[in-house]
Length: 383
Ligand SMILES: Cc1cc2nc3c(=O)[nH]c(=O)nc-3n(C[C@H](O)[C@H](O)[C@H](O)COP(=O)(O)OP(=O)(O)OC[C@H]3O[C@@H](n4cnc5c(N)ncnc54)[C@H](O)[C@@H]3O)c2cc1C
Image (cartoon, rainbow, N blue to C red):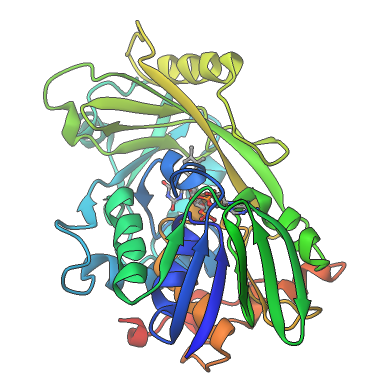
């Protein structure tokens, strides 16, 4: 039986551990008292096959069968529930709108342009006059992030693995074909280590003497305010083509984000008052809503590399060191696919899809390659 160490207990590490537990014994090491404390517990919980570059969209689509029909006993309820996204075109942004519309027509559930009446029916607070055109992305869904994350972690335990919290990896070295991780909770060894340390992934690589991938953690802010009227819980997410804000109903409130992306060192991201004020201002400009109070605000780090495509695969400079990082704003919706790819890389098992374009090697080139096309990536055999 093979052993695997996973550094990081967010949704990425949990997913990789879940699939790896089919082939060996998994020990997942998480530095916080609870896995999901960082990016995973701070997301907007949306599944959107319209979002990101072709490689990201292909990973999202490849994740859909698992999210729609997870294995029996994985979760108590559905992981995906319909939400939809209403995307508005601020006056002057018509070129971007046309591009996004054309792009969205190729999605598994194509976008459709809707008139102002329909936009207002879907979300009565959008301000007429502020936008010229609108489209609906009907296939976008809410994800039950906690259920997905717990389902993966539960699967690791059920299959004989361990999830160890308060276990910060402080050093990583390789000797005689084994990785040795020294942590706050003791020492652990295995021939394979998966680096799923989120914003800290380059730091963890540094501990192991592995070449970094040039990860950039970017802070994103969100806050909750009151839902303005009854029935608002059924509104779609609303955003604009320039990606300057979004809002969506969430647990009986309205989740709002200024869609900020401020470079930060890895850490426990905190919301900045200015970003919250910008979010309030953008929301009030695009809608008739007057925000009287911000109930709760938070921030999280979305970590990406230059081509905004996940990095998954064995490090070219370190045998048995597998990257699972740079999941940007897509790490929840792509978790089943990237976890499965990381597991295949860790076990050196061929997959029925190519994933060379996700390899860490490209991040060391001067001009990173272009992600492969969606069509080349899609397969029915992901179930
Ligand atoms: C505001 C916001 C909205 C978002 N909305 C969406 C969305 O709608 N849909 C979507 O798909 N994605 C969304 N995302 C992105 C998504 O949250 C991330 O891509 C995803 O959670 C990344 O998962 P991860 O496991 O890589 O990282 P994390 O959840 O950050 O997990 C990494 C873990 O590694 C641990 N760690 C780090 N260093 C060490 C060490 N040395 N030893 C042990 N453990 C270590 C950390 O404690 C952490 O728990 C959003 C993100 C934010 C911030």
